[in-house]
Amino acid sequence: MNRFFPFLLPCILSIPALSVAEEKSDPANEFRLPGHRAIYELALGETRDTAGIQGAEGRYVFDLEDVCEGYTLNERLVVRLVRDGGNVLTDYRLSAYETNDGQLYRFSTETEFNGTTGQSASGNLSIEDEVSQVDYKTAEDVSFDEKVLPPLAHIRAIVSAAKAGEERYAATVFDGDIEKPVFYAVTRINQAEDVKPPEGVEGVDHLKDRAHWRIDSVYFPPGDTSKAESSVPEFRFTAILYENGVVTDLTLDYLDFSLKAELAELEIHDDGC
Image (cartoon, rainbow, N blue to C red; front, side, top):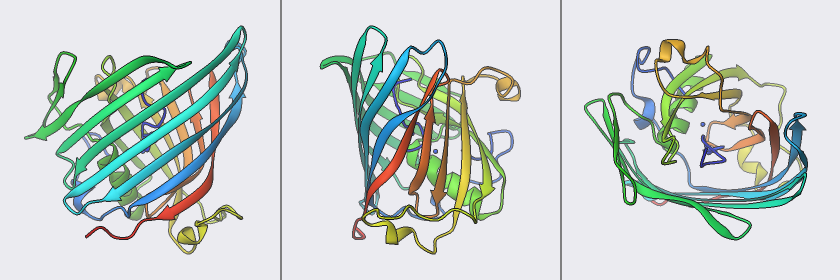
């Protein structure tokens, strides 16, 4: 998949609620995410025998601005994988704008591999009357007969579900990739009273005394949502999610290997409104 952060992605990351069949309400407008800049240090987590990966290091930067009528989002992820036969340096960049109601998402992404441009995508995702349309600038447009959540609406929906005491949230979410633009994401939400903010991290005071949850999100290929969870997932991440949208203790699982992303620095921006 194009994004390393499908929630914060969060993507990752890049973060899910009830599927279209289960949907009770649209939580995207219920609260605002504070603008913030979070920096994560990346390291190799677990590897499977077939991965051929010996090590990993890198950094992920998530920069969100509240611009009143919506949000601007800039992400950059740089990671070096030490593999059998040589290293691979991946440099991923995203620049995006999303409206408050999650009905419009403008995006531009570019990924380089060892200094050479490998993938890029740009365009608009628009949602109207439960129909989602992706207009790409350099690829054929696609549409979906269902509501597709852009990244920030997805994060807000998960937080809303957690605050409401729900233990599960599932939705079709937008990834931005041309070949695989959407995924069916299922998130399990659990209490995390025993978890404390990381110590010695600049700006971590913004997380103290805030509600937080342990989340486990699994991303499946799109299709019949009644059968999706019996299919093979393509990506998974776990994290501690705070009510202001910040995540800590993040693991990005690509099935044959995983990356650990530890919060290294946090800055909360002044309110833009």
